[in-house]
Amino acid sequence: MTDTQTAKPGVLSLAIKEKAALFAAYMPFVKGGGLFIPTSKSFRMGEEIFMLLSLLDDPHKIKLAGKVIWITPHAINNKPQGIGIQFSEKDGGMEAKKRIEEVLGAALKSSRPTHTM
Image (cartoon, rainbow, N blue to C red; front, side, top):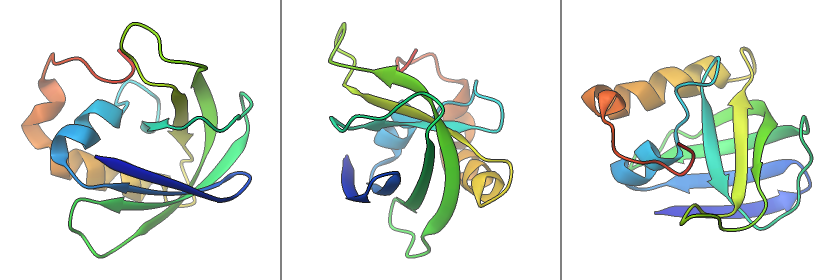
């Protein structure tokens, strides 16, 4: 699934180890792409976030920036607590979007439920 560590405020290290977990976390409906990150840490809307993202077994980590656009303050209707991050169009966001969509491929068209919608 996902491992989240917080090194300091606004900095996250996220490892998504399964394609199903990536599908559940990815937000293709967000301009520029985004990820839902399960966390109990408090964030504010619009807060800048810097992430080090690992996908599946790829040893290459993607460094990216984004901002908080979604907050689920506690588990609601079987949806986990966490934040939604919109990728920055610079600072690694476009690389992250491209790589995630390559990994997910046809699964992007699935109607399976995700952590957000």
